[in-house]
Image 1 (tube, rainbow, N blue to C red):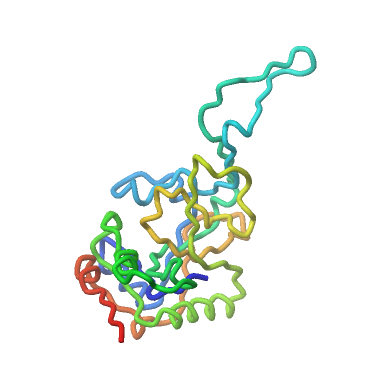
Image 2 (cartoon, one colour):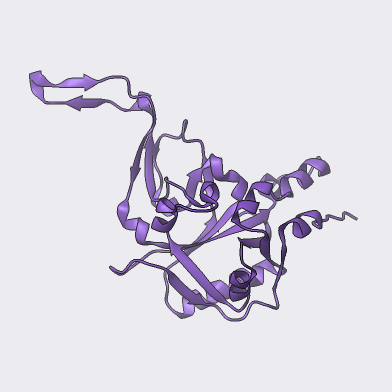
Length: 233
């Protein structure tokens, strides 16, 4: 797991973040993001949610007919994407992670490069100007895990992996389903709580994890971004 310094959640309305601070988490379905249309569409909508495989054109052969009547279709020009409708019913809580990236395992040779990496991309303003951030990230994650395990809820939690759709070829491993997105979204530094849907009902899931106000704070985007500082001895 990447070394995470803080977990963030952006919102247009401050009251939505205050609900999280009170420990009330709202998890939309993958299908919500798959079909989303509205303000902030470029950031929120992702037509590749529920993706389970990508095959590059040069790796695929397509035929019509059989035996002597069989003909191969030539000229496939774009990757072939396969989705699984069932996982569109699964629920996710999408967050932003300020993390160490490759420097979690490598020495920092350029402080300027490291600081630049930690900078929050302005594209995230599309989610809203209000920001909730954790002041004790490990405790924040621990409380979510404790709430889930006490309720016997199956879940996965971790960072999203970003891939190049023009190069990736093959199936997405089962353990990474719901955690792979196009590198067009890499500015989101997404960290997800993923809960598979075990029923036939599809919709928003609500989770109460207990009050989080002692380990979180709410501010606005520019104030948070401009006040991230690093001091070395």
